[in-house]
Length: 189
Image 1 (tube, rainbow, N blue to C red):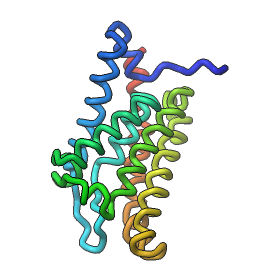
Image 2: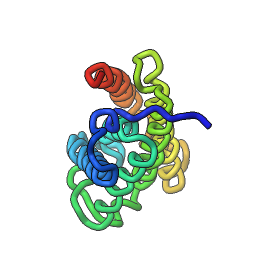
Image 3: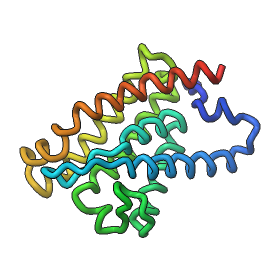
């Protein structure tokens, strides 16, 4: 059995009781996603806004690891669906969570898990390899988000509304995450 590398957060907070640390980290991750969801640029031609959420999802998954990353994004989605205004632009409620952006919310949870799983193998520690977990997470978000839109609008329209307008911005977010995590590891040493 392969021994997993510690995540950045376990390295920075080794002395804190594990359950308390997990609860704090999961909550902080959900809060980070909620805050960056408010960085929102509406695009008039699509129901999906440009936000800082994907950047936060990638960072949360890599920094917290697979289980805590998934728990953090599940908490974020749950509190938003229950009515707290944490979604893009302060939106909230089950109707929003299951509307056109619902696939992206599911994608965020799976992407945090996948990104975290790859980070647990140490791939986010070097700029040379860090692109792998962040690209994988981004692809998961696109697959589930665009897939959900395709059910509602058809594949061609889903690609035009939910993926193509975001490629450049997400490439920038992916690159920033691929630089940020290795830099954080250098500071943590």
